[in-house]
Length: 223
Image 1 (tube, rainbow, N blue to C red):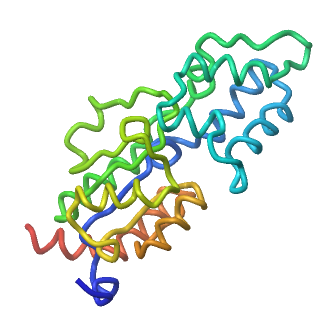
Image 2: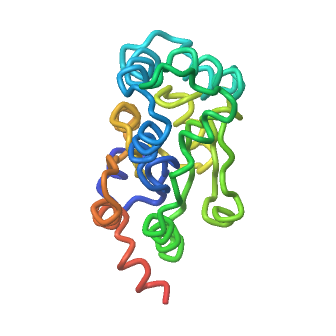
């Protein structure tokens, strides 16, 4: 399989989960910060230190995503970094669940996955897990492959986790589209040779993915 694969309709699409197949994670976090009266700068400082492009290896978020740090240990670590507007401590119990309680599945994106499969395009899930439970009852049957960071002890943007998904799909990078809402993750996929979509809006993502997979014409051919 050569570089010509990049000019043909993609044969598979790999999706991120949080913020792509769900509603905005940022909006969920904003709602949580407001409800619990968290000083936003204390949360932003922790996230920048632990998750920015130049964050050192092995931060609490990195270790959470690779399953080296349990959810409750992470909750205690993060709670120690946070401050409330009124000066009260932030309860660590169930902190991650409270943070993402407002995040819901995004029907438009799940419909896109279903439409791709109906058009003969394979689909995969590649997600950095924050100790969260995935709604497998809803996701069941939507993906040929599911690679979860905490289960494989790797995290995006490590090239090895992308190659793991490609190997399970038995496809080359040039045959695959990668969709994520994180620019560093998208950049890493592009460097490996995948075609990429930086997700910001379901309608725009559908338009870009449809153009890269030619899913509409494939769907017509299959009927």
